[in-house]
Amino acid sequence: QREVDSNRLRVYRWVCDSRRSAATRCCTGVRAGWSPASWREKLTDQAGLSSDVHQNAQLPAGEALEAVERKLAALPVLVSPGEIVSLRAALANAAAGRSFVVHAGDDRAGDRADGPTRERSIEGTFRLLVAQVILLTYLSGLPSVKIGFVERSVTMADCLSDDQCVTDGSLLASASVKMYSDWAMSLNMLRAIAKSTGSMMDWVDLIYTQLQAGANASGSGKIEEFEKSYPKAKPLLELVTRIDEALRFVTGCGVDVSNDVFREPEFYTSMDLSSLWYEQAFTRTDATYGSDSSDFFMTSAHLLVVSAADLIHPNSPYLEFARGIYNPIAVRIDCETAPSKLTHVLEILNPENISGRVVLVAGMGAREIWQELPNLIGAVQSCSSPDVVWTCDPMWANNIKLPDGAQSPSFGLILAEIDAFFSICRAEGVAPGGLHLNMTSEEVKEVFGGAFSDDVPNKESSNNAITPRLNGLQALEIAYEAGHLLRHTRS
Image (cartoon, rainbow, N blue to C red; front, side):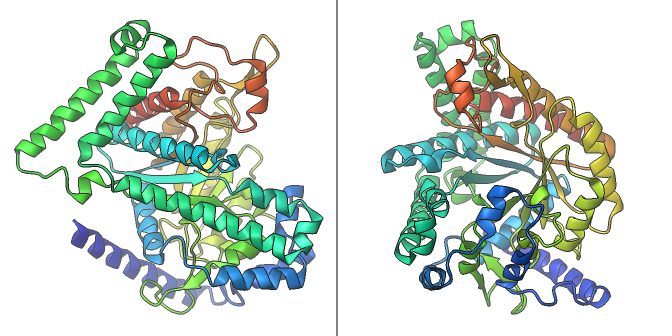
């Protein structure tokens, strides 16, 4: 299996190099003048950028920053260039409909100041992600690309909003190194968890474990009673049994489900493109995976995420930085995204039209997506860089007003947007490439509804949930429904 993966990567790199050579002949100067620091030249005109992005784009005081950058540049990479190359190849498969992306995480895990609490939160969300992927893969027959995200440390956010921290080199260095350390510890923990199971069956048990947690939270404590109260539990339990039987069958046929291919889930990480001076410090070349000295890898995460609204500005420092790095770029799009401006951004980010380079994350709402997404797909299909991965983020634009005045995302509308996304992609002739979900394994009630919920979220929890999260059972329900939609799309 590893030899096959290695051959696929070599073929993918050869295709990328060939397209890059052709594009260079036809589009001389596309990357001319780019360097890891060229984004700084775009800081002179920031009109049109949102206020928080404007703040993040600004450089801290010169002397303080130079010392911090030297310190960060001397630190080891957090992800390897080889993994970034592998992710681009995996995303190329998703763009062609040969795999499906599950991009999920808890964007408030980074807010936990207590180390053990933060670790438990990240571990729980990772296990939930793996459980989702098992459901999706079994139901759809497609391999899944697992990408997890964790928000940056709150320490860095606080520091960048404090004038003294920005001008004080020691405070800035402390916040920067802490963010690096927190992220490094999280990655090390996840890699250890991925290697800690005895076989694939251990990961299948995570689905049952999540259902048992739901039974405990409901007060019954027994799966049998939980199944009677919530009929949706029955098909999930039956699915666990079928997956277990399938694994026992292939074991009986002589396939070792305890080897690395079965028991160790391959996963990648993402991070919002924010403090560019920080990202620049981790932008490195690599003689093994880079085709030439112009290939730069941003090595603090595999996938970088940025809003389309902050790329379309003519002097966007984010577009300037993103266009030159090898990492795949995920671009958030919504109802305000103009098709002509999006295609302009794509032609700058991916002039060679290399598959796996760009992911588009559409979050529009269950009603609006029917009108807006077909226009964007049509525009992208007609431009010179149409090879993208289409994914859906249903978490942001599906709020309803509850009787007590609280605003809460509706689980029913979230499912409706996912269903619309699959239908539109099928009608427009593109592959539905993945889902982007904010979730936690904790028993939160930040999203209203679902087959396993009788409760209305209270006003306090809903209003405080700036970025609402699915709980474990809601996340599994979405994986179950998406698996069936994906199987129907392929039929």
